[in-house]
Each structure stands twice: as C-alpha cells, then as structure tokens.
Amino acid sequence: MKTVCARLHRGDDLLLCIRALAQEHHIAAGVVLSAVGCISEGCVRDASGVRLRKIIEPCEIVSLNGTVSEARCHLHIALSKEDLSTVGGHLVEGCIINTTCELVIGILDGWQIGVEEDAETGYDELIFEAAE
Image (cartoon, rainbow, N blue to C red; front, side, top):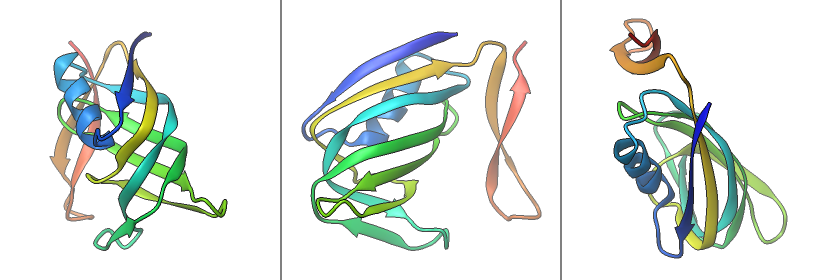
C-alpha cells in the first residue's frame, strides 16, 4: 500500500486539504489511516443528513475515518472539546486547523471509487470497483 502523508497548518480547512491531496496525487481509492491534530472551530453534518452543527471552540481530532478519492471523499470525524466531551459527525467544510494536523492517507491498490445514484436512498452513493 502506498501512502500520502501531509502536515496541515493553522488556518487550513481539513476537508478542502484532503480533497486537494486526492486531486494532486490522483487517488482513485484511499482511506484515512491517521489524523492527529486540533481545530480552532468546526462544522459537521449530524445523523439527520441535513443539519449542519457549528463547533465554536478549540477541539482535538480524536478520530477521522472514511474514504478518499478524486471522485469524492466520505469522512466522519470525532472531536474532543475542552471539557473532554466528544462530538462528531460527517465532515464538511469549516473544520479549520488550529496548530497542526498530521494526516496519513493509504492508497488502495487495484481499486477505484465511483459515484452512482442509489434509487433506494435517493443519494449519489460511493461504489467500489476493481481498477483496470
């Protein structure tokens, strides 16, 4: 497995940086292996799939997982607040790096991620295909 490693800096938007890395490295299919750092403010989509929740305080990134590709990124994040309570949800734009984020993305050899409309869910869902 090949990897892409990057250090994000203060003021970077976490999701936009991951998308940029996917484009720059032409990632057909990848996963987040590790993400360690903190944000100064954040935004996640909750389980309703509709509501965005702002987090207006510094938080530690305690987990970030999901898929990464040029086609689309699907990521979930867990954040620890200053009082040590934890919040999380679907990563959207607006999680702004505070001091750093050390990010490692694993590239899945032999796979590519595509997007296909799912009649049951009504959403464009990710599909995994063997790469040619």
